[in-house]
Length: 237
Image (cartoon, rainbow, N blue to C red):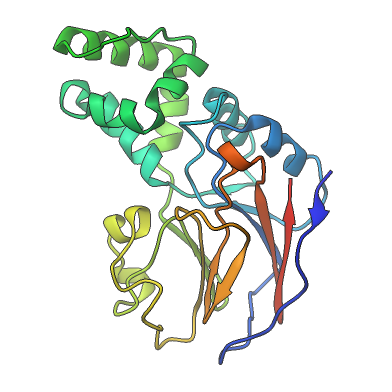
């Protein structure tokens, strides 16, 4: 069961004004068990901030579950970017991805990982096995994930948004990996930003930035932010 964590809040200079109420799901990182608790609970439409894979035990289950639900808005996180880079160039990007949780993702798709996969042939074989296990449809779904979603004056991103640039001029690097001026520098367009990527001990609102990555893969706490006119309410799965 998802339990309430926090009260409705309305702070900052700009009123919170989405066009419609919606929910934002924090970084899932392979925790299909926690995601399933969110999916069975009725409520407004869901937006997921990205980082569906790596670290936790069931990245395959998370991806397949989300891809089968076209009504859920799914953004791309930096871990999805690393997986796609591995698929495109396994020799160049393989070690980096494996060091950041790729081993768990490969294993969740039934791909056995050598204890020391340092040879080029090993990375290429892993890529080929993963490509076969995922299938073209799931890979294409990943490649087409957007970097940003917006309703009214509330935008959802994975990692950050450059406060000096309008939303339609954001780079994929800022959206997926972060930006040095975020969140310390306030935006001038009065837009609220909801994001994951950086683990916080509990959902946090500072200025007009809402942080909801509570480290589900290691804390067992997957945060869902309810966004409605006037405020936010937080729950955990």
